[in-house]
Image 1 (spheres, rainbow, N blue to C red):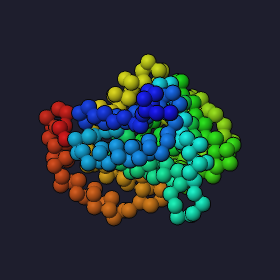
Image 2 (spheres, rainbow, N blue to C red):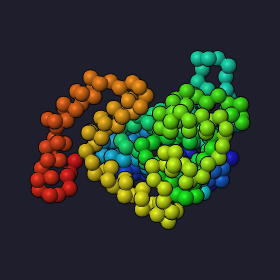
Image 3 (tube, rainbow, N blue to C red):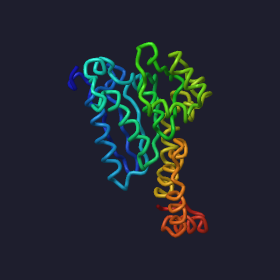
Image 4 (cartoon, one colour):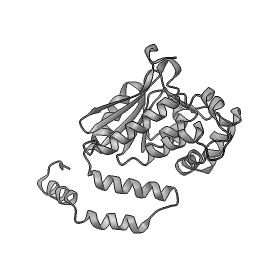
Length: 260
């Protein structure tokens, strides 16, 4: 497979305050290879460095979001040394980096989400899916012990019972069940998917970026059982003296949208 086949590493586009990363191997259901992970990390660095970007949308090309990491690469490239980075740990690093991004993130689930890509989506702040979505985590069928960061995310986002069900049974579930267990934030008909994503992205891009970044950090830390209360309190106190709150109050009094 080469990038001349129509597949490529993930594509980054920036339109005003919105960045979009599109997984782009549709011929292989956007299955991720090592080069894709390197590209994703570079895209994340670019987004973090650009203060004008206020929201990220992550999606896939074609009929699936992603089939996860290329299992052939895992089998070929995994190393025995405990201190070496395996493909699995490289994937974990990408998912953790995505979760920790300063900007709010939306996963636009245009279709099936399988294997490691289920964790990539969980690392986003919001997941909007169409009724064509389905998911499954096949680790138990493949003899793969999933990496710790992904297990933690499953448990903190979906709860203990749902995490056990999905990991230990490798059961495939449909869009309605994904919504019921909290995997999806919102479920819409396919023809409304872009409208719903655009509406949420516009809302997030219009909110105070520093306040959102600080609250997102505190929420994620709390979910991991690692909340730095002193740091969160410092950010909260600083926000009361910030230019953001001055603009927010002025906009409220003037009955207009704030300009952050």
